[in-house]
Amino acid sequence: MNIPAIVEQQRVFFKSLKTKDISFRKAALRRLQAELTRREKDIVKAIHDDFRKPEFETVFTELGLVFSEIRRALRKIDSWSRPRWVMPVPVNFPSISKIHKEPYGTVLIMAPWNFPLQLVFSPLVGAITAGNTVVVKPSEHSANTSRIITEIIEKVFEPGHVTVVEGDADVASKLLLERWDYIFFTGSIAVGKIVAKAAAENLTPVTLELGGKNPCIIDETADLKLAAKRIMWGKFITCGQTCLAPDYVLIHESVKDTFVNYFIEQIEKTFGKDAKLSPDYSRIINSRNFESLVKRISGEKLLYGGQTDATELYISPTLIDNPSCKNPIMEAEIFGPVMPVITFKTEHDVFERICSLGKPLSFYVFSKRRRFIRRIIDNQSFGGATINDTIVHFANHHLPFGGVGNSGMGAYRGKQTFDTFTHRKGVTTRGTWFDFPLRYAPYAGKLRALKFFLRWFT
Image 1 (cartoon, one colour):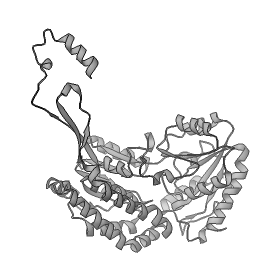
Image 2 (image 1 turned 120 degrees about the horizontal axis):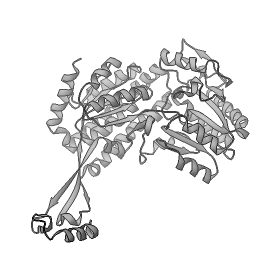
Image 3 (image 1 turned 135 degrees about the horizontal axis):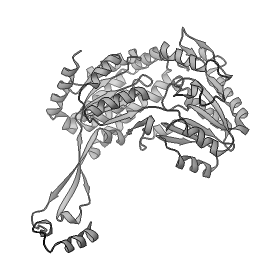
Image 4 (image 1 turned 180 degrees about the vertical axis):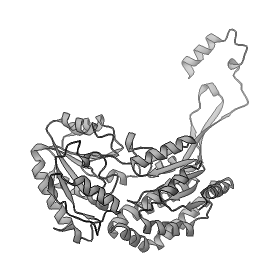
C-alpha cells in the first residue's frame, strides 16, 4: 500500500475545490445514508461476529447515532457553513467583519474497535460536512466491521474524497509519518501520546478522544435501586468496553451492602444467572485484552462473578470489593465487565480518591443533595458528566463530548464535529469613504489623542 500516494491523491482532490461545493457535500452524505441503510443487516452481523454485540445495542449505540448525525448535517449544513457577521470595532471604522468557515484540507481519522462503526462515521460525517478530504484508518481488531466499512466507503465516495486504509499498528505508524491538516484519534492514552507526538512534528492540530477511570459516586441519599439499574446498564454495554463506562463505584459505606445486592439482582434480571448464555451479553474483543483483564482481577476479593472462559473470550459480570489505589485493577482504565466497589466516609475521602486517578473522560454522581452534587461538579475536572444516570450526556448533540488532560483534548458531536474540522478565518472589509488619520506618522502631538481613543473606544 502506497500511503504517500494516497495522501497526495487526497490533496489533489481537495485542490480541485469540489469539496467546497455545499451541494457536493450533501450528495455525498445522502449516498452514505442510503448505503448504510442498505447494508444495515450486514453491519449488525459484522459487529456481532467481532465480539458478539447484540443487534439492539448496535442499532442503539452505532447505527442510530450515525443516522442522527447525517440527518442533522443535511438539515444544518447551509447555516453552519455560512459566514457569520460579527460586531466591528471603532478603530476600524468604517468596516464590516465576518468569520468565514473553511475546511482544514486532508484529514486523518483513526478509529478504535469498541464502537467500530459509530467512531468511524460520526467524525467522518463532520469532516465531510465541513468540506475536507479524509483518510480513514479503522481498527484491525474489529476486522469484520472494518471490511464492511471499507466496502461502504468505496461504494459511496470517490477515492480522492474518502479513502480507507486498513492494517495494523505498523500501518498506523506509517500514516502518522505523513503531513496532515488535521488528525482525529479515538483510542487509548498510550497511543494518544504517540499520535500527539507525531502531529507535533508538523504542527498538525489534533482531537484526541481517550479514556480514563470514570468515577461513579453514590452518597447515602441516592435512590439505590434505580442507581444500580442505571449503573449496571452503563457498565455492561459492549461488555464494559466503552470509554464512557463507569470504571468504579465510590459509595458511602452506610449503603454499600444494599447497593451491591440491588446491583447483583439487576445483573441477573438482565443477563440471567449465567451471563454466558445471554444473547445480550458481548465478549472481550481479543485474547490479549482477555488475558490482561484476567490477570488484573486475579487475587482480588470478589463480591460477585469472576468466571472466565478463554475459548469464548468470556468474563462474567464481576464486582470487586474495596481494592486499594495500588491494586492492578485501579492503575488504569478497566475496559471490561469488572466493577470495583469502593467505600468512603466523608466528602474529603471522595475528593482524595478521585484526584489520585487523573482527570476522567466521564463523571457520574448519584445523590438527592443538590449542594453535594454542585460541590463535586464544580471542584472536579472531567470531560462530561451525567447526574443520576450514566452515559446519556453523550446522546445530547448540543453538548460537546471530549476529554481533558489525560482523557483527551478537543470535542465533537453535532455542530461541534463540524466546528472541529473547520478553520474559522476572520475577514475585515474596510470602507474607502473615510480614513482615520491618527494612526499615520508623523506621530508628534498625537499620543494624547491615541490614549484617549484607546481608553474609550477599544
